[in-house]
Structure formats: C-alpha cells, structure tokens
Length: 530
Ligand code: PFF
Image 1 (spheres, protein in one colour):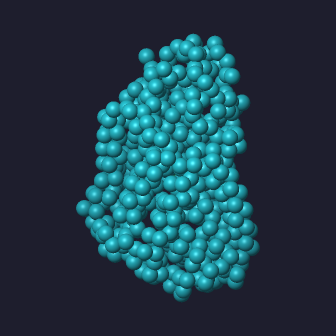
Image 2 (tube, rainbow, N blue to C red):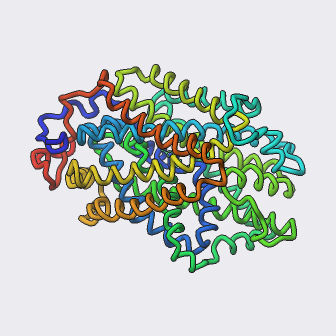
Image 3 (cartoon, rainbow, N blue to C red):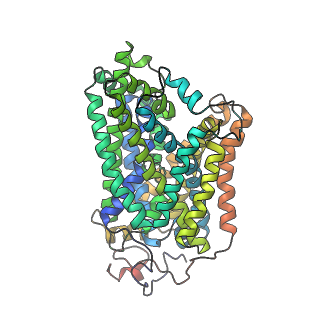
C-alpha cells in the first residue's frame, strides 16, 4: 500500500513547520519567474522559425495542451499532496520512486551549472552595451576577445571576463537561497518579474517600430505548412514546452510543496502556462522585429541572415542589431538586462529544487544546504563552463540533459503515477478538492497513455539521431564524455543518492493532506479541506 492510498489519520499542523509562499500571488509570480527564462528569449524564436514559422504554432499549442499543462498539473499535485522536494515527494508516493526524484535533482544541478554562466555573460554584455564594446565584429569579439574559445577539449584555463560576473551570480544565488522561500525567492520574483515585463515590453515596442520590422515578423509568422509533416518539428515543439515551462524537472514539485493547504492549484497552473507562452510569443515578436531591422540595414533578406538561435543569436546577432541602432545603449541594456533577470528568476528555482532535496534527505539547515549546494555547483560551473572550452561544453551538455534527461524523467513520472503507484485518481481528486478549475477524466489517459507514448517516440528518435549522426560534427570522444557522460551522470547520481540512508525528514507519520472528492483514498475523502 502506498502512502497515497493509506488511510489518513489526523494530519499534523497545516504545514508541519514547512515554509510557505506568503500568498497564492507569490506562488504564481515565482512559478512564472521560473518558467520565463533564457528559453523564452533565445530558444523559442529560433525554434519557431526553424519549425515552420506560423505553422509551428500548431504543434506548439498542441504540445502545450496535451503535455505542458497536464504534466504541470501532475507536478503540482505531487508537490502539494506530498509536501516535499522531488525525492521525498516521490518516495512518499511510492517508496522506490525516490530515484526518479534524484534523477530530476541531478538534471537541475547540471542545468544550473551552465545556466549561471549564461547569466554571467548577460551581465557582462549589459555593461558592454554602454559603449558597444563588441565593436565592428561582434562574432570575433564574443568567441575571441570575450570567451577566448579554444579547441574542443577540456581546459582548466579560466576566462576572467566570465569568471568575475559569475562570482556575483553565485554569491547572490546563495544569499537568496539562504533567505528562504518567502523572504528570498518570492521577494526576488516580486521585484524581478515586473521589472522584466516592463523592460521587455519597452524593448518589443521599440523593436516593432524599427524599419524592416515587418519583414522579420513575416518571416516568423508566415506558415510553412509542409513542416508539419516532419516529426522533428513536433519533437522540437514538445522539447520547447518542457524546458520553457520548467516541467518534469522537479521544480514545480518543490514550488507546489510550499503552497498553503487551501490553494487553487489548477487555476494557478493555467495562469502560469498561458503567461509563459504569452511571454514566449512576445519574445518572438521582439526578436524577429529586431532581426528584420538588421536585415533591412544590411540590405539583405531575412533568410540571408545567420546566427539566429541560441547563444549566437543573443551574443553575436543581437549586438549587431544594437550597433546599427540610434540610442543603442538603451536598447542593449534592456535586452541584456531582461536576459539576466529572466535567467536569475529561473536559476533560483533550479537551485531551490536541489537545496530543498538535500535539506530533506540529510536533515541540513536551510543555510548549510544553500551554502553547500551553492558552492559545489559554483565550483563545477567555474571548472567546466567559465574556461576557454566552456562554450562547446555548455552546448553539448545542454543538448543531452534536455533532449534525453528530461524526456526520460517525464516518461518515468507519468508511468509511475498512473501504472505503478496508481495514485493518479487520488492526485486528480486532490487537485479538484482544492481548485476551482476541475480536472476531468481526460487527464488520466493523457498522462497515462498519450504523453508517455509520444515522449517515447520522441526519445527513441533523438537517441537514434545522436548515435547515427553524432552531435554538431564534434569528435566522438567529446560527445561521449560531455554528452553521454552527462546522461550517465544523471543515472549514477540518482542511484547513489537513493542508496544513501535517510538522515533527515523521512517522517514515518507523514500523511497526505485530507481531501474532498472521489478516488481510492476514500478514508481521506471524508475530511474537508480546512
Ligand atoms: N524555464 C526556463 C527557461 O525557459 O529558460 C529554464 C528552466 C528553469 C528549466 C527551471 C528548468 C527548470 F527547472
């Protein structure tokens, strides 16, 4: 019998001493802050363009409705019901599922080590915007003067221009983590998110009024219907939704675990999901208008531009746009400032997931967990990604952690909840008891059948491509170490941390909150939500 199915005696205190967000608004802001990140600004526009422009919106919206929102609800249900970060929450759902929680925590750890570096670049470029320091050749400046990129390999040579701002990023993250959920993470989002929205809206308004903006927008929105028959476009849409909404990473489990007992979970989820996609669209409009302007200034068509995705879009192509523009310092500061803030509110969520998982397993205080995990992540971040070989390593690790790690995690989560632990009806009843937007029966087949099947197809295709084609012409040994090595690390980390004994809060008397509604846990159903 699982914890979810066992009859619930009297649940102790409303939160059993757990921290909470100060309000539902605080939770929603923090969840939007986690979702809206670098993925929205630099990933979405390029993915949308390559995926068929206007036509991409179809797989994107289907992915949002058939996987994004349903899996977000699953994350919320697990977190709110079992009130812990991913490892302990899954353990309370089904003892052996703890390993899945550590697998997710490993992904969070890996992503945060390079995500922080990109925020450090954004801070440098925020500063460089005043005076367009990248000069005439932003491409040479980025990889040469700024990153001092070397051959594919492993170099211990730190790059000072990256390392200095990176120290600031990690110091701030550790302080905010140590301040806790309400005083640290929520405050950061309450201040950061409005700033981000205002700054980014100003940037988009400026961008759409530039000469040539409409050419860029046409390039983004003109539908290429033939792309819809390409499986890879669908895969790209699902991957984008996962990364962008921060789902199946365990983050939303931790965030939901800090919600008060009576919290409108599904309605909040809808707000978060649609806010994230709206920001993504806004970013698409801003970025493509600016690129249309660049093409116009250089007397090219949009299709003749290059460097339209990822780091190169933000750190080479955008500086070009900025240099072409009157009043460019302001525009540059808005762009890189937005990138840094969006990144920060996401990085804090990644690290909170890691820190709370360790607090719970090892019984650490918040401060010692924050400092320990923060310092270890910072060391890896410096050693691997702030060096002359950091750019390549970052790109490779990102590709494997996201395209393989996250998909494995999402499949496992759906299968365990529906087929192994069989808690899905209890979770549905739980969400329905606390929320105004009720989840219908459709949620169960979506989570239990559609999502895992589609995700498995996606995973098999991705693995096949990576094995057959390798990655980006990189040497096989390199892809082996940084790509497959990353995947291996996720499994080893999960196995080791699951095997270590619990020293912390695996409280045997834990009982899920009583809920109203139907479902197997009828003993709980009799009690009302207080
Ligand atoms: N959603 C963030 C983005 O779009 O950049 C990235 C992210 C944050 C992914 C937190 C995963 C996560 F847990």
